Length: 100
Length: 146
Image (cartoon, rainbow over all chains, first blue to last red; front, side):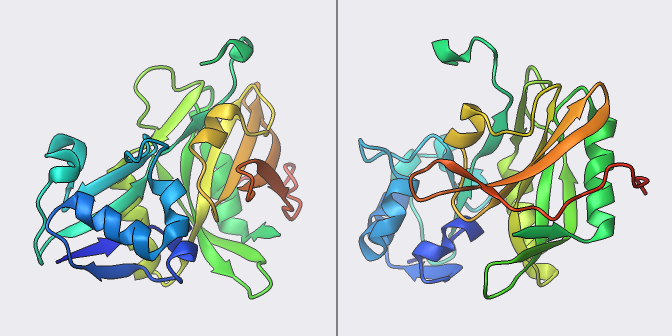
């Protein structure tokens, strides 16, 4: 069991629920359960390979799961799993049609 | 539609000018009516945590993002979106802005030319993952920045 905190921009996909209790042993199971219960969340959390999108950070407590055991990071009833959208951007380079 | 109360509006414009020629960034907090009309009541200025060229890129750390969500709850406001500046460029979202954009959020972009506020526009991500302009109540730049 873990508590999942849904960020404001994704709450429209969870019926405006900000916090959810999910029965799971790992972060991967939390994500599986979440995307099963709220299918519209899936494209915002996972890429086409089913991996967490590069613009999404998942925190277990205060730590990014990329610094832990990724989706295999173990959770318990005291764990707060936070979905943190990466906030970034910037101006376009003039040569951007070549990709950057 | 989105509008600003005068203090956060002034703070945002002052931030964009002060940080020029780098990109500034921060959060927008406020209210939303049932018809979708938004009003920004507070802003939270944050450091551009992008390592490298801050004149062309901005990034907000996950810790600052988590703080913003907490701030919204503590102040009984909605986290309405993000603002950032485009130094020397128009207030139009780039591909870099689009790929990282979130649904629901208003993205305010301030164009700063030669250190002066040039234009300010608001954008939201549509269902097709493209930006659509959100009507912004006109902001008069000749008004003094408080």
